[in-house]
Image 1 (spheres, rainbow, N blue to C red):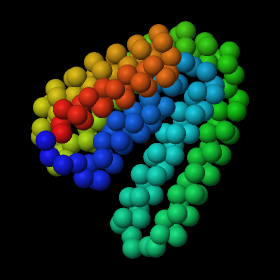
Image 2: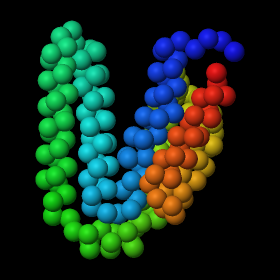
Image 3: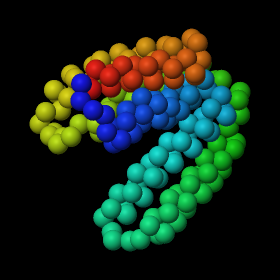
Length: 175
């Protein structure tokens, strides 16, 4: 077994702990159809997208760290205002009606988006190999189904724990 460097430890901790936490917040927390959980999920999603867009912008333009920090803070503020304003009129009763009518579609949609977002993990992505990539993502699709079932049956923290253990075992197999 090769010696673990500080970079490898950081990657291990990120993949085993931070990534599952954020993925569970974004993809499975709102499956409860509670207003508070949807707020947290959307806020996390918007913050993540804002951070990605800010870093893409900052990598393409030669600007200093102070400007980058200001852009990220602006994104954080804008995200907060957007989430609170846009969902202020939704009631728990209307969310319950949506859950009854369309709940299973949201669960399946969440699983599919969770699976497809992992296409970003592929280095040197080639569109001609998309069917091959999708076939290789089938285990993630089934894992998304298991995680969603665990989340809905046992609660958020059990789904998070299972996700973290799965990622941890996957990383240990790659070492």
